[in-house]
Image 1 (cartoon, one colour):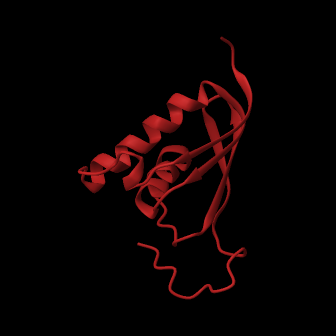
Image 2 (cartoon, one colour):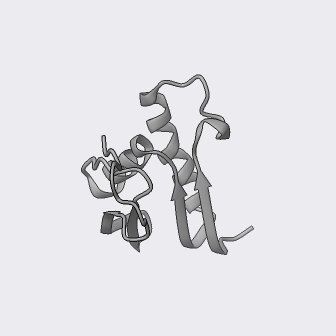
Length: 104
């Protein structure tokens, strides 16, 4: 089976099998899950998660950890296979109430 074109949404929360894991273990799990799916998907990738896993993805794809606020959006663009460029991070323009986003 070859690569499939389309979009992929990855939601990594306690209800998605993260229960009982500590923060460090959860942070390590998300990028592995994401990279496993990237080999099967060409197109858009939507990650819905909490600040620590998103920070890990920033570290993995942008070589620095970024603490994002709750419900903010970060956009990475794949510039070549497995190589990503950060277009923006921590965007809250979609929120009507931008108070107390609590970045860690």
